[in-house]
Length: 335
Figure 1 (cartoon, rainbow, N blue to C red):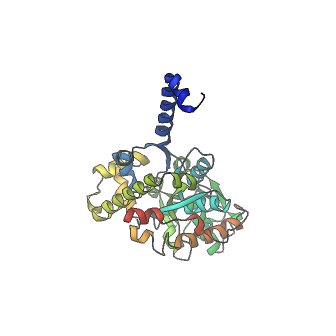
Figure 2: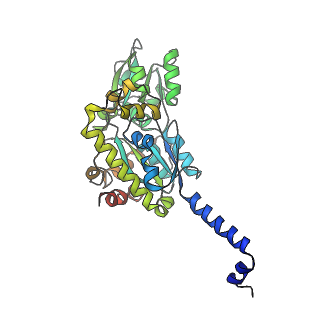
Figure 3: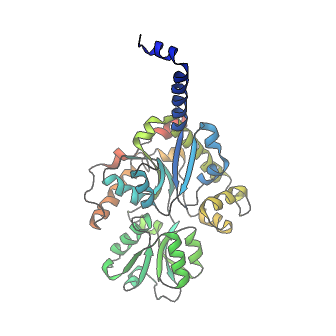
């Protein structure tokens, strides 16, 4: 007889080997690579505590990236399943058909990204950027806001030397005096403010109809196969954000929470409290409202896509970006 039962009975070692292989495969499946950046957000306390690993049994590989564009590329290659990305790089990915889902608004960027002009550069407004060297990470939310800001002020971007530099490169270039201005976020924002002044911010430009946000995005297929992990992650996010909102005064430079944020972002702990105060962290109810996952995020993506197409960054604007946004995991986490 050559049935499965008789074969395993005749060769118990083979049967044991097959079972062990199956077990190893199941254990390997409970692993996820999570791409994070240097945004100063309550999620860093979850990363530090290890609570998500304990709650789910998953091995989480936390990998730091220099910008949302790099995160999206890593997700496209299959090396990353969940990642932090600003609305601009995520919109670019969705426009190109990448099968991703935005499932959590990490932060409303508000004043947390700003255009800083170096002291002595002669820049007092966006109009003064003509002929100057301005750095920002390309395809980031900061890059989007910079270009929109110039368009709104009637500044021809071709007359501005817009340079593609990652955050650490901006800090180094600023230190050397190689650039006149930069549109960037913390921790670099705090570093360059000491020798410069804010000309515009994501909040001031967003109020004119072009809001930006940082979000958590996931490979759609992976999310569907790992729903339990997704819900547990969102529960941890809700808890962390609420802990910050309810006890903001206790998040001082020497607190364990701020030390965790500083550790995972390479920021100076002394700069973290003031920098975090520039962001807005939507509640679970706000997440699923029409402002964000319930419609607002998709609308913001449409406006972003129109701009990206004008800039030659994408080939087409999708008719509806709601297909790339889901509130399912937040709703399940709230039950």
